[in-house]
Every structure is written in structure tokens, then in C-alpha cells.
Image 1 (spheres, rainbow, N blue to C red):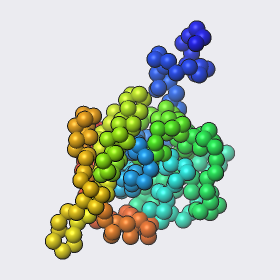
Image 2: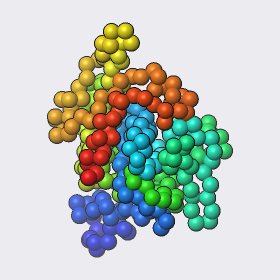
Image 3: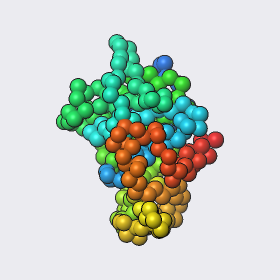
Length: 275
């Protein structure tokens, strides 16, 4: 290891003196963002994007100006949930997010691609750079709560987003399987390394409710989320069911019409955390 000159910006060493916040990027000069909440998972396929979108919808209903930065560049699903067809516009100095029918501002790579089904076959540095540009080059005007749909896992792209965007807190999304403790542990430890507080855990696909007797059926086996939360000193914010009606709304691009109250505790937790 070479002698430290205390200039982290030009240093590749990963030492204990390095402050993760030293890499934070400033938003566009015309942006005004009050709170930034990251939604993360230790692995893909647990419903992180759904929780992100539902959170933005709920805070929007409570009278807050909300936005979604879709940093999951290779798996952009946010525009689909809101039925957004138009593309993002821009000029020489800025990119402008697209608004949903209810006024939620959204920026996603699918709003820039010629066709929604075009794959993003890019290498890591380009993917990470694109996620960073959604923060630095997009005009986010007067946003009370921005929700960042983080890339899954703990690799290069999530690390870049963690280091570039000043997250006020994160929500960890998981599923009921027994390996959840290990997966949550990875996300929690990464957040600790980045000095970012954790608002709590959300268990998605926790159960399905019988339409006749209202019994809750654990489709994926017994939940381990409570033990996991206790292990890491966290709280369980919500346990979301498998909801066929909600799935239909997402597939139809009508998520803003959702009537479920299962996710209301997430909005409660975000408001309480940000007071």
C-alpha cells in the first residue's frame, strides 16, 4: 500500500479512512429533492420494484410530491407498472422525467430506449454511470420523497449508487424462504458499510388470503422475517400478501388505482423516519 495523501478522489485503495460519503454526487442544479429513500434487496425477484412503486403511490396520495429513480438499469420495470408510453425528453443541459397520470415523476432506462423490449447489454461501468446520471443530469423539481429502485445484490452497480446518491435511509425487501437471513444480512452489512440507516424490512409474498374463509396460507413456507429482524436489530414494517388483483393492475399499467391497504405501514414508517 502506498503512503496515504488523504485525497480519496484519486485513490483506489479501500482503507478504513475512506469516507463513503466522499463520493456523493450533486443533483442537477435545478433539482430540489428533500428526502431520498432507497429500496434494496440482497437478491433479485423478491418484489423490490413493486414495493418502490407502491411506496411512491401511497406518499403521493398523502399529498406529497413523489418521484422514482429506477436505478435497476438491466431490469427496468417501473414504467410498465404505471402504463407510461411516452419517452423522456431533454436538451443540452438536462433530462426531464416523465410524469404518471397522478403526477409521480419517473426516470428509467426504458424511457430512453427505442423499444421497451430492447435489452440493456452493457458492461458494469456503463450501467453504473447511467444510474448516476439519473441523479446528476435529470431535473427533479420540488420532490418531497424520491424512491430509488436499487439494483439487486451487493456488486459494482449497487455500490456506485450507494456511494453516488445521498440516501437518507433504505427499506430492505425480502421473501419468506429460510435463506432470507443470509440475504438480508448481506444488504444490511452493505448499508452499514455505507453509513446509511435502515428504516426496516418488508416481506413480500408473505402469504395468500383465501377469498372464502380469509385464512392466510403461507405459500412459500413459514416466515422467518421476525427472527431475522431481531437478529439484526431491525423492525418489520410490513408483510405483503400475494395479491392477484394487484398483479393485474401492474400488468395493465394501472398501479395507481390500487386499493390494497397492506402497504400502508410502509408509508407510515417512511413518514415517521423522516420527521
